[in-house]
Each structure stands twice: as C-alpha cells, then as structure tokens.
Image (cartoon, rainbow, N blue to C red; front, side, top):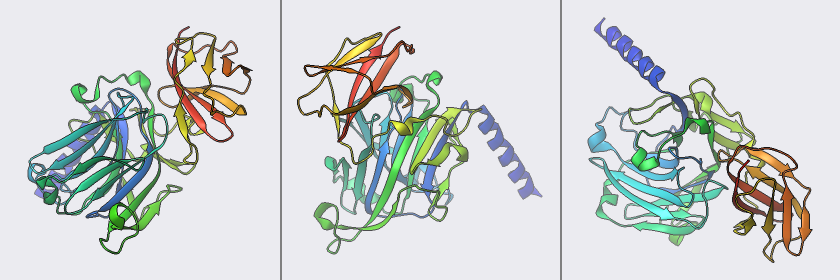
Length: 354
C-alpha cells in the first residue's frame, strides 16, 4: 500500500512540474551507452537569445539511482543561440566540475549546417568543428570518464540569463536541425578513421525515420529548464531530425525552414558588402569576382529560420546585384539572406526597417 502511495504522489508531483513549465522542448537520446570513440553530428543549431541546442554524451546516472554530485559525467557541444560567432564545449566530471571553453568562429553557426565531432579516448578528448581541431584536452580529469554514456541532442530554455542571455518568447517556435549522427568505436591500431586512424565506423543514422531500436524521446525536465521535453517536439521530416522549442499549447514542427537549409554538398561564403544596410524597399549585393553570374535566387529568412521572401527577379550591373522586395512589407528586424548560384549558396545578413 505504501508503494502505491509513493507512486501516486510521485506521479502527481511530476504532473504539477509539467504544468508549471511555460515552454515545450525536445530531447533525443540513445538507448545504449558508449564508452570511448568518435562521435559526429551534422547540425544546424537554433538561433535566439536564451536558447541552447546541443550534441553531447552523458552518463545516465539517474536511471541507475546514483547521486548527481558524484556521478555526473558529460561531454558537450552546446550552441548558445545568443552568439552569432561562438560555440561552447564542456566536459563535466565529478562534483559538478565544469571545464568550459567558448570558441570564436569565423561564421554564424546557426545559419547553415556544420559538422561537430569529438574523439573520446582514455587519455584525451579532442573537439572538431568542420574537421578543424578546436580543443585538445589531456587533463587528468579525462581519466575519470570511465563509464559508458548515452548520445543525446536537445533544445531547451535555461533559467540562467548570465549564461544564455534573456529569452524573448515571441521568437517561438525555434528549431534545431540534425542531418545525421555517426558513431565510430575506439580501435587503436586497427581503425581507418579519425586521428591516427584510431577509430572504426560502427553506425550511421541519417534520420529518415525514428529508429526505436536505437533512440528514445525524452519526457522529463529539471528545475533549471523552463521547457518540458515532449515526444511531439522531436520530429522527422525530409531526412532531418528537427528538435522544436514551442509554447505550451502548440507542439511540433510548424515552419518551412527546410527550403532554406544548406545541403551538405554546398559551400558557403559570407558576403559582407550589402548596402544600404539597414534597408527598406531594396538592397544591393556587391558580388565577389568568384561568384558565377548564373544566379538562381535570392531569399531572406528570419531569425528562427523561416523563409519570408524569395525572388529570381533582380537587376545585375557591373558586379552588383540589386534586389527589390516588390512592395512586400516585413517586420523591422535582422534577416539572413541566401544567394544561390548553380554551384553554391552564399550567406549575408542585413536589417530591414519599415
């Protein structure tokens, strides 16, 4: 009888916590655990102050009934949506010791897909962004990461404004996109991939569907998270896993940013010379010499990745491309532009004022 009472009150407490959360997020995690290896993802992180999207591994200590303080182990890529040129890595060890590094990038990580990888061995952890080494960690605490961890991805809204910045719920819904995940086991001396060929590919998931033999969708939250994870906010569409951050009444994926996401067979180049900026009815892009004149389209997308304007009608003169909004009115805001040629997509940003 006592056990039934405990279950009842635990369930009731969980429902109260669920009801109190103002937002709904998503978390996707493996059923199995992995110790050592190379972990890779191709993702387009979520943009917006107060939002975190991620790729990481973590020891499932709560499932084993273990203390968080002593048993927390985690290896993180954390995209902080407030930054347009930074990405965070973190290694968490016993007694909640955080070993954080904030990396400055030459591009906005939230605009297109990028590949994030880390190699975890008994002696070191290396972090890579687009195959470039950004962190080499050989500190003694690496050796305390001595148990298997689950692979996870999530999108959430932390309460810590000093870490992630203030949150504006008017940005909702916000999405993070995942193209694929790869896991390579650690096979020193017999591998064929990664640093010193010490890793061997075990599996790839391209997210064409929900593989329930490998993954599960989370339905929990915690005190520092303003979002409750719900299964409906982990969506598979057009070969992508889409993790959604929404309000507490509208779940799932409701936008069409897939039309503006850069496929992995495109290169990107940020175009700096766009004028006037801010602009109102039209703007001009000064084209670099290496851009093919066979331009297919110019599009604008808002800060959550939703396409707001597209045209293939423009004026080209002496290396400059003039684009008119054709009497279309937009909310005054910062926008990202995508100029697409036959071979690649080029990125720029500009501000529209009514």
